[in-house]
Length: 81
Image (cartoon, one colour):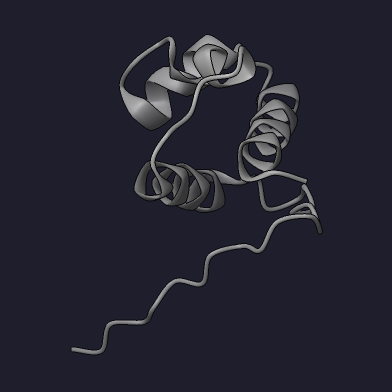
């Protein structure tokens, strides 16, 4: 599965659970309503934006909804202080 396909599948699962549109999620993640639809229609994003999107989804993923096996979930580093 390609990087963008993984991201879109993850996004659609999140939207399904939260009952929001892909446009709304695109605004939440990228602050731009068309990004995810552009990806769906063959567009691309940078690796940095991909990683940022996956991290956002991981940070906001519902606790009672399993994270999909097809994509590695980011691990938060603990800051000791």
